[in-house]
Amino acid sequence: MRNFSDLTEREILALAIGAEEEDGRIYLDFAEGLRTDYPASAKVFTDMAAEENEHRRWLIDLYREKFGEHIPLIRRQDVRGFVARKPVWQTQPLRLELVRSQAEQMEFEAARFYRQAATRSTDASIRKLLGDLAEAEARHEHAAERIMQENLPASVREEEDEAARRMFVLRVIQPGLAGLMDGSVSTLAPVFAAAFATQSSWDAFLVGLAATIGAGISMGFAEALSDNGSLTGRGAPWIRGVICGLMTMLGGIGHTVPFLLPNFYTATVLAVVVVVVELAIITWIRWKYMDTPPLSAAMQVGFGGILVFGTGILIGAS
Image 1 (tube, rainbow, N blue to C red):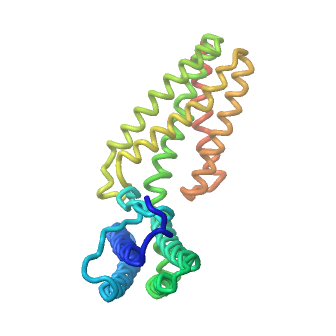
Image 2 (image 1 turned 30 degrees about the vertical axis):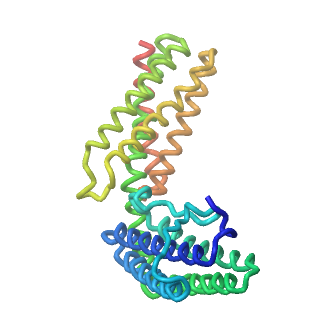
Image 3 (image 1 turned 180 degrees about the vertical axis):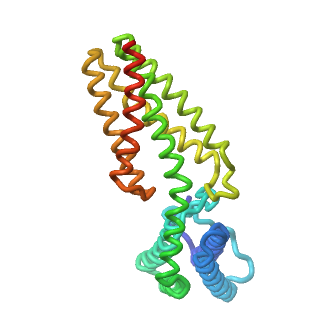
């Protein structure tokens, strides 16, 4: 990699052309990824890509005037300190707020980069060139803000934000909550049945660990195979499966770990406290994201937990 300060005027201009082309394609990728669920935001990024294309043409005209027809391939990753862009295909599925934030950051970083480069230059022609580039990026930064305001009035933005929240609930909260509830509640019976039957912390831990891992694998596959998300909009099935499986294991391992303590009664009391905390977390999630009244959520979750907990104790003590 070369330092930016070592580049010639020709190389700096070629680098700027390549950067504008890349940013324009990123915005088009954003637009394509958002078109189905967020058409207004997709139009914003299509217009921003058009702005980038205008800057690219302006830079190419300037390059031809100074250096001729051939433009060398100089990329961001070839220059030390230049702002790298994460490939859009690595961020699928696109999240609306993340895309908006990344676009704002792209424009801000590009403008700052050119301004700082211009202030470090002592050659008059290079300083002028970098200043022109900084001014172009600053105009684009303001244009991006203007385009966003014109195409995303408050009402439209609120609608898209609400749609993003609903999809987050469908794709993350629902599979995660299902897994957390299953892991926290369904493993109570085998863990406490083993604990009261054997009076051994280690035996209870082994049973709880096996139940937790088994439930996590089972729930992960069940969620992934339930639907492919094409009609329900619930997103990639393997992502939901991973979320559900991991949350199931998290819910089960919480009240299993205390049985690593050698003292059986201490481990049992701590495990009960952990169960209460787990049920409280589930109640909060149901209230926060599923619009369930807190009292109703607490009664539903608590009633289910008490039934399973009591079943485990009865079976273990028999």
